[in-house]
Length: 260
Image (cartoon, rainbow, N blue to C red; front, side, top):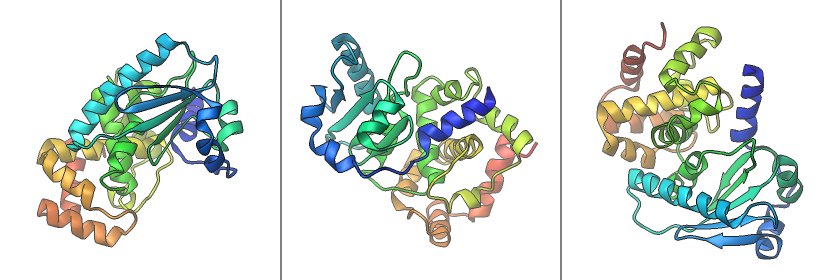
């Protein structure tokens, strides 16, 4: 079961190669899909895939998620986001050329949506909204997406990976005992992460920064970090928080008892 869950996480969150069809299907979206809109979303689906009632319910939940996420990032400008939903991964790949369950880029979110699998309305939306401010390293980027999906989505990430009642830090303790420990300094230099342990570590660190030092400092950090320059990122981090990066990492480690 855990092997299947790990594979699912990879399929969902790691960007796979595309066969180059993105431009074509996006340009022709109005002739390929049926659509319905709300204040901040255009929902596209293939004819016969979803009922109008389901579409309206999806839009309502996404609007609620949008308000919470935009409030977190303190974004006032109105964004219009395209959501493309497919009944299965095969149909999604055939049309878009992208492998995986979920995909977010520019102002587009692409997901598989059926009776067996539904992405939570937060994770990819955090990326799309957050990228209007900056695209930080994976530690902060993915950590924020998982943190907010947990916070607003009633442990959405925990449910997806098979620990529905546990917090991110509880899951992190379980995983680190089996798989070892990921260094925060290493994660700060990654553009992407590829396993559950890395996602949980990142989310735990983001949660710690916000709870211990406040959201305003965190937002300043989110807006300031460059994507992959680890040395520069540590300097930026230390300037914002007024302490050495290693000291913050040690405080997080002790606070969460992640080495025990």
